[in-house]
Image 1 (cartoon, rainbow, N blue to C red):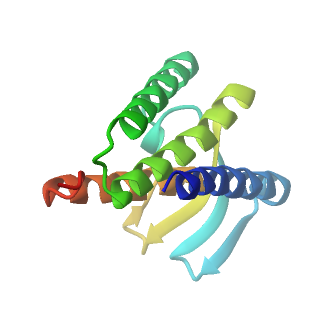
Image 2: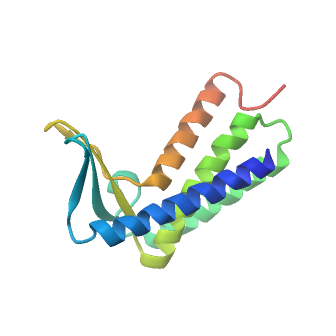
Length: 154
């Protein structure tokens, strides 16, 4: 599973960075592209906080937290021989997404977001990116595995 985990991490980081580069080149001038009607758009945003733009302008804090979280994930991943393959997958997804956003935050002081989901006129989901998607999907998978006692093999 280690080779697959490395592939997932590399894929998620490269895909995330390529899509953010595209968003910067195509969307930065304020243009929003409709993908699926008013439901899904690509809209450029610079997020100087965390998820949902909380804790704005805390760059050093987020860099340190990301490093600590990646170290903890690495320790758990490499020292626990009983992790299920799905647990390893979830950890690789989280790590890949965290690294993708870390790169932005380190280089520019903010994270580039561009995926803009809207539910009619009553709710705009906060703009997010591919790295966020990997972190969220990996976390959801991890929570499900823990809830159903499948995080470790017996």
